Structure formats: structure tokens, C-alpha cells
Length: 465
Image (cartoon, rainbow, N blue to C red; front, side, top):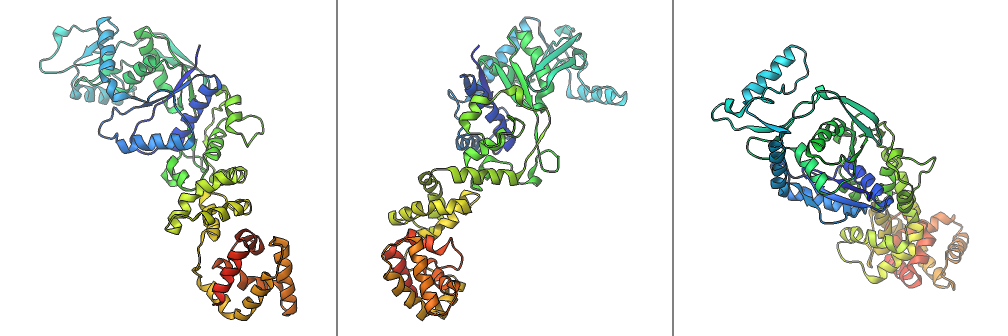
């Protein structure tokens, strides 16, 4: 059997981080088995579904690197097919018209509640003749679900879960206005798309029993199920806005690398021994849905940022330059020059150990992006004003350095400090201000080596005036 999985979000907002993990697990399972990963947009709620949300889902999945096979299926466009299945079940006696009015259904629920009974449809139109239908009431179509015995779900995560059929009512398939319900649409789409494994949140576990009855009524094979636990916040409560960012795009904007996010989401509920750093290639090779735990996982921002720092340090320098260039050009207010980009690339090895995310990296790299004349912050201006003569002497000493290397530059400045009877920092601090425009930067001599002789000396000369 060729494995086919799907991710089927509703386009009513951003790509939720829990949905992103569900998509990842489906993607990994399909890739592990050499199968297909499909995307379906469940846009049947026309009032809440928006094109902006659809675009956000596509963008979020693309940022995460979760590519899908085939064109995405838009569920609303298949409403005719869904209705066709409902009418076919009606013709075969597996479904029936129900003429209950909203008032009758409300009364039914109130009576059940008063008696302490579960609130569900009582099947009053299940075996009645349509000739008894009240005038002016448009019927819904309900599934004639089994009332006796049990429905057993052999779930890859939850294990064997048994539902008494008496507890499952005759769900509506087609509303009175002819529109299909979510339950019908999902089953028909999963069947028509050839889905072999339904991997989704465990809040859908009860749906699996009801949908199994519908599969069986249609005479279709029931897919295998895997219901994964939800993600909780650090306090153990269901992940919500009060815990921080929920959408994938928010983590992208925080400067999280896609590879780090994939690794982190993978480890939320799935593991392989003590392995923490798991590349995408390893994840595809190792992933098995049966290894997902039953307990909810807790989202830990500190761990995510630590993992992100690891991936940032391991990423190719040129690739990082490409990632932070748009961020830097926004901060810079103009395109970066080729000379600036070259300096940033040379400085990347020293910059990335000091950053936890792309935003921090971009901020740190600005030191190499600035063009002359530099803008000096207030503290830098103060340092320069107090050390004009010392900076002039430093420029002369540095101009005499033959090999423009970190060690040679440090030796020259240290020698100057000794001749002036000063500690190294008393010379290095105003020199840092002159060269960077700030009193805070990566190690001074590292910066100077990367800027190069001409640029470094020109900056000092401009600062001295």
C-alpha cells in the first residue's frame, strides 16, 4: 500500500503552531514511506474563511519547508460531490430524511438534560415514512448509524479505543439548505483523495468513530488513524494567546530558522532515545507515527531559542547573509552595497556565535553595513571628543601595521597604550567608537580585520575630523 497523508486546515486565521506540527508529522510519515503528502483547505465555513488565511497557510508551510504533492484541494468546491454521496446513501437506505424543527430539537435536548441523559438526536425520524412529514419543513439527511455493538478504533498513538454505538447518534450529513456538513465532507474528501492514514489532533478522536460508521455505510475502506496529543503551554494548559505567539509567521518574524522549528516541533511528542538535534534527513529516515507519545507536550520558548542558536551557528555563512539581507536593508533604509555584503560575509563567523536568532544576527551585522560618514551614538560622540589626539596617534600606529590581522592590530594598539602610559581599554574604547559609531560591538580587532585597512583608517580619520 502506498502511503497518502493529508493536512486539512480551516482558513480562518494564521497557521497555528499546533497545526504546523500536525502538518510536519503527516509530511514526515509520507516522506518516510515514499508516499504522498496532500493539502486540503477546508473552507466550507464561508463566513470565516478568507483568502488572506489561505495565503497564510501556504506561506507558513512553505517557510517550514513542507512541500505538498499535487494541487491543494479546496473543500467548498466539492460540495456537489459531497451532496451526491449523501443522496446515494439515502437511496440505499443507509440514510434518511429528518423533519425535526429547530424547536423540536431544542425541546429534545432540554428534556434529555433534565433527565441527566446525554444530549443527542433520538432517532425519531429514523424509521418514519416521509408521508408523515409536516408541511413546509425542509428535511436534513441523517446517517442511519449502527445502534448496537461497538466501534473499535485501532489508533497508532492512542492504542485501541472502543466506542459503544449506542452513544453515537445519527449525525446530519446534508443540512436543510442542501449544504454538506463537516463530517460528510471530510470522509468523502479523504476517500476521493486516497488518504490511507489520517494523522490529526486527539480532539478528533470521537469523530473517528462517527466517521468510521460513515465509511462503512458507503462501503469504503476505513483509513488508519493516529490522533496526536495537543500542545500545551509551560503551565500545562492548552496553548493559547496568553502563552505568546501561536502562528508560524510569528516565529518566522522572530528570526527562527525553519530547520530549527522543524526539529523543535518534531521533538514535541516524538523522540528517538536521547537525540535532541535531528536533521530533516534523519527525521525522514527515523520517523514513525507509532513512536508519538500519548501525553501532551509543553511548548518551551527557551528550548526553541537554544535550538535555534545551534542551527544558526551550523548554517553556511553565505546562506545566512542571504537570510538577513532583507532585514538589514529594512534597518539600513537602502540596499546594501556589494562592499558591505562582502564585509558581512567575512564577519559572519564571528557574528553568529553571539546571536540566538536572525534578528539579533542582523542587528550585529549592521556594524559591517554602515557606510561613511558614520552616524555616531551619543556615547560614541563623547568618547571621540575626549580622545582626539589619542585617536590621531592610533591612526598613525595602525597605518604602519604591515599585516592587517587581528593579532598585529592588537599588538600595535597595545604598544601605543604602553607608550602613553594607558591600559589597553583606554585606547581601544575610543577607537571602537570611531570605527563602529558605537561603544558596543564584537571584539574591536576582529572588526578592524574584517573592515580592512582602508575602511578602518578612513573611519578613524573621519572621526578625528
